[in-house]
Length: 215
Image 1 (cartoon, rainbow, N blue to C red):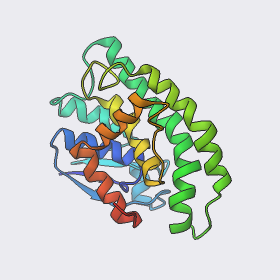
Image 2 (cartoon, rainbow, N blue to C red):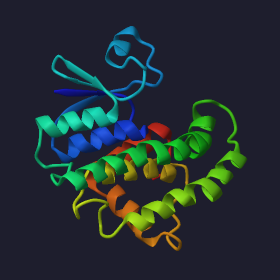
Image 3 (cartoon, helix red, strand yellow):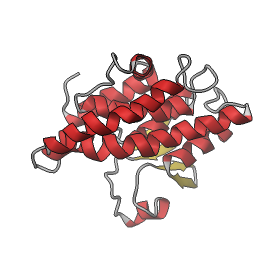
Image 4 (tube, rainbow, N blue to C red):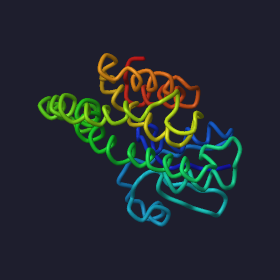
């Protein structure tokens, strides 16, 4: 059975778990809190980041690498488009989620509102959160709003692009925020729809249990 090392509130771990669920691949989740300083874990993930992944004797790290591997060994249902341009676009949106969205939502909203008081035992720096929510998140949403022409970001079907974009917004939601539906109606509807898929909804339920958040 495949083994994923990490915790579900990580948008990167969540991305891998959703890919596994969408492909109906059985897996076991073994909790690892970053930075993973255990020597055995560092052999799988030299940077100590999550997730790491084990498939038999094969080990991998980095969510994008793991998802690409899963697509090759379990190609159906496909999470990557076959058209070359759509394929590249899907990779781009995955990267946009991993870097642009996570870079703001992770340290400036989710960490401050959820992790700081629960795990770091310090008060939320609300000024940091307010600046991110009011000034930094809207331009990211504006770009995504302009890119949505249907229910999905690429090829009119669910793909890694949608997983990559939706996963950071799950953390935004856990922090008590949502996409402004008046300013960004297409994106708000997209996030609600994708986070409601069984594969993502199951992860969010586990997140709430781990973090002690209300449903």
